[in-house]
Amino acid sequence: MRRVTLCTWHTKCLVAVLLMLTPAVSWGGTQWLIYPVNISRVYDGDTLYINLPGLPAVFGEDLGIRLSGVDTPELRSRCKPEAAKSRERLYGQYVRDKLSEKIMEAQSIRIFNVSRGSFFRVVADVEVDGVLINQWLLDNHYAYATINGKTNADYWCDSANY
Image (cartoon, helix red, strand yellow):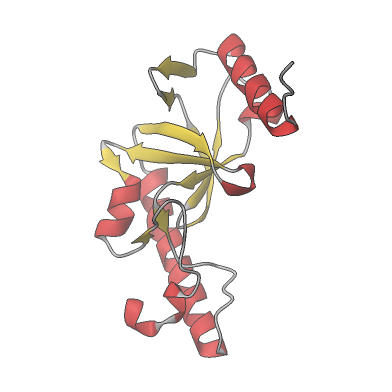
């Protein structure tokens, strides 16, 4: 008899509830496509929170989405010295505000390639008005690419990377 871990059990329950309760989630081969989406807030340059209409609040309200494949400056910088910490935080606020402007003015938002990342976070690609936000962040030097979900925690501490 196969044992189901708590993490697997939660994932299966969430998928089952989403499929039963709303047409807001559809299965398309190997990727999830989530619609309609209401953005509740942008936390930082690579994390936003969404509401999925028609779902119970526990599943569909204020669901955090981490943008896949990108890393932006942290609002809670751990850089040393203090000047580097302040610089990262300031640039983090700037990137957050740019992302917020782009997303909050959107006519259409599509979330796809949804998966679970570290700390059981939801990781996904986000498309706004036909523009892949993950790539938009990279193209505008608001983010750097991560490799296999791995980040270089000190990347933003170096002033040469801005």
